[in-house]
Length: 297
Image (cartoon, rainbow, N blue to C red; front, side, top):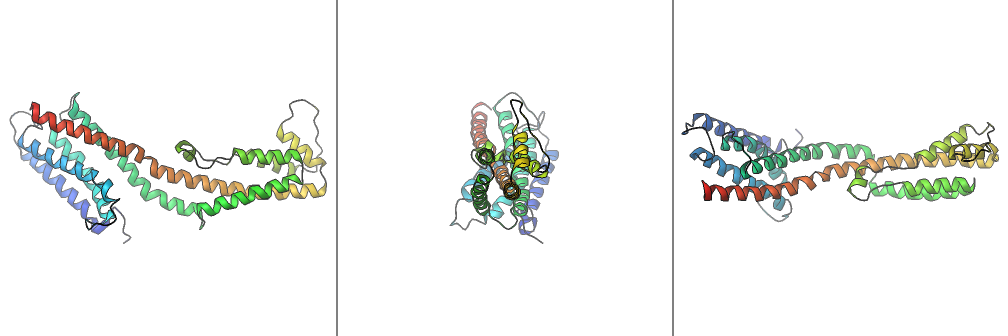
């Protein structure tokens, strides 16, 4: 069986989380508090202590995965426990408070905990799904290799466009300048090759090269202009135009793969911009929750 973070060590942490959840649930059913179940009973304090310790242990994962020289278990094992025990924390917290909520710091801590856990669920999905998609998308090429080939294609396209017409050169240059790959977070999520319009125009020009077209009206569009150039160009220019279309089509394919690669990596990482700050907020809310309990209960 292929080892993943979910089936690590024969689902060790899954079964531990299941047993912990069942034990907590049995204790909750067996417990007979005075009044409604709440966090102030002995069981509430017990489950609350377990939950607080679990939260602290889960937060320590951020330190463990950066500790390269340690004997405190593998990172994969910690991550597997992080997932399953973090999930079990939902039930333990509900049993701890006896399903009682209000507009207070205690509920705030619970809500933050849920946000942290559910953002973590997306992280699990991302790490299990996106690396496989990235491997398929790269097709035995690295991102650096694809970017290098795109740069070479851009130079070849400009040189070839010079042999056709200055307007064609300007169109190709504009498409190169409008291509956005990488950059900030938003640009990574929306990376795209902006040369599609120019390529489509050039392809129409090559397909219609035997059709005579002209226009004397003002505001002539780029498509109409390129069609006219193709229809009136020499055979050599037409051949170069077709070659230009071929290499720009290759560039579009590569740029789409690079853009997809960047998007997938961004999706694998962007959830951490939510997960980590929420985790720190949870630690602060948990501290306030514990202090308020000891001072006011």
